[in-house]
Length: 164
Image 1 (cartoon, rainbow, N blue to C red):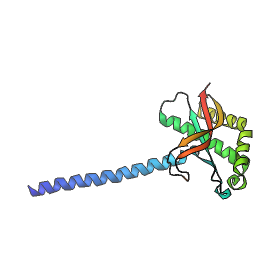
Image 2 (image 1 turned 45 degrees about the vertical axis):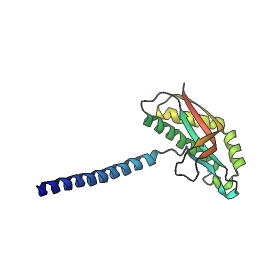
Image 3 (image 1 turned 120 degrees about the vertical axis):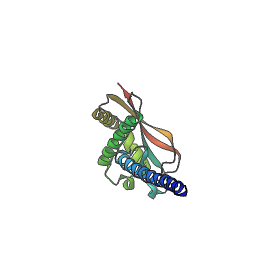
Image 4 (image 1 turned 30 degrees about the horizontal axis):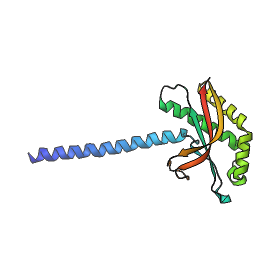
């Protein structure tokens, strides 16, 4: 009787340990897959802490159209945000955070708003979504995302995508 009881407890413990290990491996795999397509948007677009002002510009992409799933919507928003960030980096150079003041960065973004809309629209089209893009500045709340910026209100370049 004692052997059966001990075998049952041992079986349960082995099952729990195996489940935890499998769950952890599965989580790590999903996390690595997500990191490769994670949006740079909802991220810091400009953060020049060297000037001491601590002013930050963030990027946010929202798609209001129809998608099959929330994951698909997130992937589209990530793709558009990453494409815009890469193009801005190409325009301004990789070290624009160090070379430009907050005012210069904001001015450059305002002057390039039409080009940013075109890039976002073509990125959405490349994803297979026929959408219009409209970008502008606003103050948005961002929660704790484990980045350099604490939760709070930030000046944000918002790119809104809507079906044509």
